[in-house]
Length: 396
Ligand SMILES: Cc1cc2nc3c(=O)[nH]c(=O)nc-3n(C[C@H](O)[C@H](O)[C@H](O)COP(=O)(O)OP(=O)(O)OC[C@H]3O[C@@H](n4cnc5c(N)ncnc54)[C@H](O)[C@@H]3O)c2cc1C
Image (cartoon, rainbow, N blue to C red; front, side):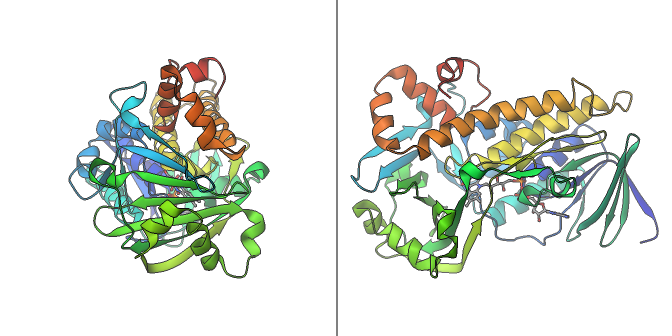
């Protein structure tokens, strides 16, 4: 406990957002510490990436790791209405930006390990497993106490995911009551796949009562399968049975699951949707799920985390000139407004989904070229693209 470890930036959390920010800051020449409480590799939910993340990962060079052959390419997203078996497919190459036609499906145990190792290779110091216990910030800097060390840093990033370290501490974490769901999920071997290019696409199945299922195939034999339902199911005696029964409600999905065998543990999570009242203070900024997490339906979480962590790292780099406070208008407030804009557009899309009849509505709309482009682009995560007609007309 003796010596104090001094850094330009301390980052709590070595998930995708924390690792990505650490890489950016280290590549900019800053002394960065990442403190991650879990030992890797470890299971984490959030396995389907979005195309709009790819330029962010190309900028650091991590894209080469993603594209090295260990992760399966995702070309689009298929939505199936279980009551009618009607489908709608969004191929990302139909979006507004031709530079983001694909993404990847990633088992997070591997992906998070790779991203954190990449941050280390870029020069960040990784403290793992190590848990931040106490935090003290002032206009001059921050002090951290972990279970192993004391740290001092000029700036702090809170990228602790849904644990939302500062949000909880300052009582700023507010549950989004309109997205009060529970998810149950597991990995399976032997889920049947689509042929060729479509093998790596995500399949989202719509059930009655605004419930839905996901099927996310990984490179190799394993597929992630889950169901999301209203929180009223949280007390259901057998969530595993609920997942199984849900998957049998579609002829298409029953066939896909007919030879499937569960591997590893069955998981469940609830009460995950929240937004913090404020995303910054004098010397701290929060990004990723630590600031806001809405809903998994459009696989927006990792993209929001990588994007907001990119914007946050840029603001910290700007603040280094004169060691400015992040409360200045062009720093924290501008950052928060930008993150809220992207999150708000995802939220509009999510609410459209939960209104019901999503597949029928989309099939009607996407007959028109500009609608197809607009929705595909939003689904690809391109939520800060002001050329999108749907954003211009406030449809989303
Ligand atoms: C059911 C469900 C399905 C989802 N599906 C998808 C999907 O398909 N695609 C997608 O993009 N997103 C999905 N998400 C969202 C995704 O899981 C998150 O958005 C994403 O992991 C956020 O990344 P992050 O880096 O902000 O936080 P995290 O990945 O949660 O990382 C935070 C890290 O901080 C560490 N930490 C926390 N507290 C401390 C502490 N005190 N000291 C040290 N370390 C600490 C944790 O150990 C953790 O490793 C899903 C979410 C849910 C609930």
